[in-house]
Image (tube, rainbow, N blue to C red; front, side, top):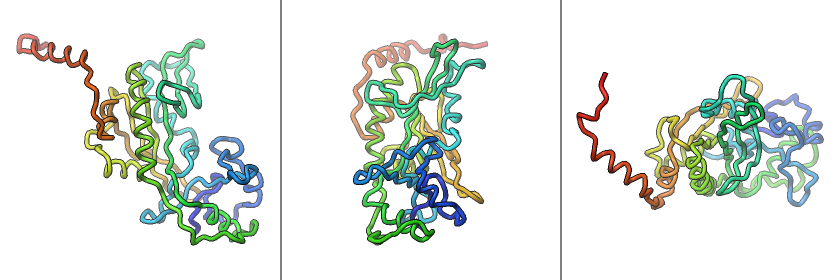
Amino acid sequence: MSNVFELFGVPTFKANEDWESLVEQQYCPYLEKRCIKIRKSQPEIAIGTCTVNHGAKEGVGMIICPHRFLELKQIFMDCIHLLTLHEPGNELHNIAEVDVPGGSIDYVLTSVRNGIVVDFVGIELQALDTTGTLWPHRQRFLQEVGVGDAHGADVNKPYGINWKMTAKTILVQLHHKTETFEHLGKHVVLVLQEPLLDYMRRNFSFSHVEHAKLGDSMQFHSYSLVKEEKQYRLRLNSRSSTNAKGIATCLGLQVTPNVEMEKIITALQAKISSRTRLTL
């Protein structure tokens, strides 16, 4: 079995595929255009590697290209419920690379009526970062299916998944972005693969990140990659949520108190009694 599970969106277990044409066209079915992951030393060559096999997760495809999550646009459909102001008749727009305070958002799913934005939700895609190089494994696979020459493709060169850097980098980025969206009363969603969320739960303070609540600004949508008869498919595996303060807790940061909010809550709690309780 090749360590490359999908190349240009096609499973490598499909022996009868026209791999020569796929490599020549360099087409990404998820972006619906040429693959934009290119070799730095050879920019005319698109790498095209979507998912790989790795170590303890042998047999489970690890998504290393964020565009792999765009399969059938399902991740956007799974966020529609977070557009709380969306109504039948509104148009849905999917806008890529939107600059916001704290960075940029990969996609913003937007509800539009009569040309006016009435609601939106930010969506971040997080694939797994790799260490080493997968190029020799790509070339070896292509040689095995009769495409090109794998001379010099040393498949013994190690490659790995940089779990720690992947997880910490996206959590730090979300710490800033969630504050922005929470201030606006909107949601931001992190789309990731289930093994990465499992890693976060084991290695960061995630006990407070529980079943998804609509009132939480930060939503986690984790997906599994399931092997079907002729292809791999994404399946929504779990949803969980927290807020901006919760993301800081995940990172072990000291959260700056919201003095105004604490004053209001203290005043309210001091006045709560049996006489203030609403009864029918």
